[in-house]
Length: 337
Figure 1: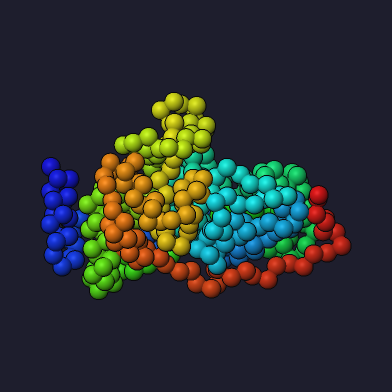
Figure 2: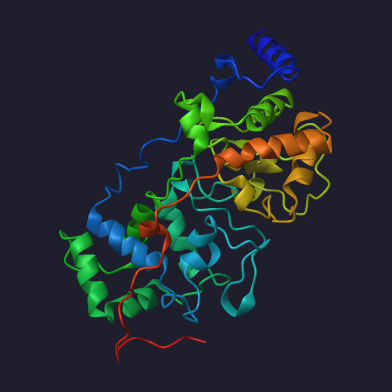
């Protein structure tokens, strides 16, 4: 009954000046003030180390690829490609999603195979298609060859006798990534600033509700909190990647993917798990058909995308710009080709 009332209210509001009743905002929240982890307490030293490691290419096999290569913080945490090039130009099957606000998501990767950003961080280092480091020992050897890194690890993990290892590197990167929050005008609006959105954006949000987009995209991240079947109302035409079933081997998980967050969505294309959707308005139309079972015209899609612009936030330069990295020494291994 509540859902019917909300939809009818939204439909009625579309015919008048764009004002959003509070009843329509109950499913949404501002970004949290932090994405801290009790299991990985962030310190200034750990964050500083994580920032260096995030931009560090020398731990990759050819010493050309860093976390930032695929999740470019100067480009809203993506590289703008359908799939990212790795070692020797190899490409995986899935799009590299934005790292911004990712630590607040309930699981990591499109199929949810990592519980948090710390678990996710070490995967690409050793993945033969991505950074392709030959072994954890190789990563540690590279880092130990530079005294500045050894000192940074000692500051970040002062209770450990030999702190330079892949596990701690992942913890440091995770601590850094937990700082990558991008509050936007949408947050200001949710906190009571009615002027934070213009009338066109408010109208776009009402259309977003009218088309049932909030069935999946809600909460603080407008996604990132659950799995949903791609093709819930109408079979998705491309089923070459069957999603989470590859992790669980449970037939009920076929075509299930983590719902992507809409934060910074107009800046983080191309879209979908395979990066094959380059036109955001076209994707909104297609999602209406396959996910909501509702027809969305191009004008309606444009209105929704106009609202999505208010979800764009920015990072401070202290986080988005590469730091000075330790200088290689004679002991630093060269590229392992």
